[in-house]
Image (cartoon, rainbow, N blue to C red; front, side, top):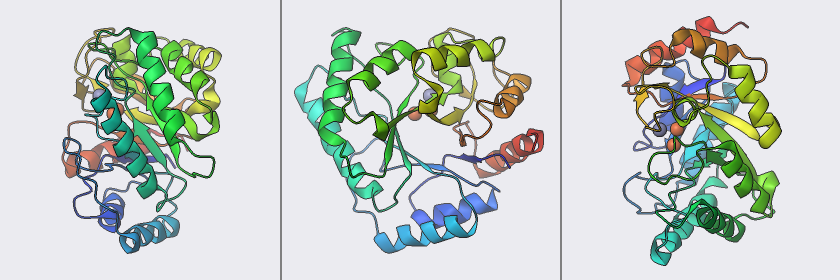
Length: 277
Ligand code: FE
Ligand code: FE
Ligand code: ZN
C-alpha cells in the first residue's frame, strides 16, 4: 500500500479530517495548524485530537503532516516578523504534542535582500530557541522553488540549516516535487541523480515526506505553480516512477494539487493503482 493523502481543511476539526481521509481512501493527510493567512492561535481540542488518534490507529494511518502558515517568515530582516514566526511555531509545537510523533512542515522563509547566509542564520537561531529534547514532533524543512529570495532552493541551503541546529534528530526534509523541479532538479529525466545528490549533500535518512504535485511551469522556472497529477511539466510517467522508486516508495506522499475532494479521490486511486505493491 502506498502511503498517500492530500491536504485537507481543518475547519471542522481533527476527527472530521480523519473521516474525510477515509472516504478518499487516503491513509495520511496534511492540514494547516491554523488559518494559513491569519495567525489567531486556537488551542486544539484534546478530545477531538484523541478521536483522530484512535481513528488513525484503527485504520493503520501513516504519519500526518501539519503545515505551518506559509505567511511566516522566520528569516525576515524585521525583528517583529521573526518574533511573530517564533511565537506561532512555538505555539504550534505545543499543540502538536497533543498529536504526538507526527511531522510539522514549514517554509524556511525569504531573506529579502539580506543574503542567503544571513537568512540561514536567522532560521537556525529560531529553531534553536524552539526545539526541545523532549518533543516527539519532527520539524520538516520544505524544499522551495527559489522564487524571489526564498531560502531552501538548494540541497546545500537546507544542509546549512540542518548543520546549525542543535537537535538535528528533531529535524527532517519534505521534498516538494513541483518545487524541486522548478528549482532545477531534474526529477523527470534523472531522478536517480537527484536522489544521489540529496543523499550526498543532506543524507536520505533526513527525507521524511513528499509533497506530490505536478508543475504548471517549465523545468528550472523558479516558479511555484502547482498542477494536477499528470497535467503539468513533470507528467504522469515521471510521477509514477517517483512513487515506486526504491528510495522513496516507503515515504508518505501528500497531494497539494489544485483539487476539490472528488479530484483528490481520483488522484489517490490513480496513484494507488500505479503503485507496485
Ligand atoms: Fe508548503
Ligand atoms: Fe509543498
Ligand atoms: Zn508550492
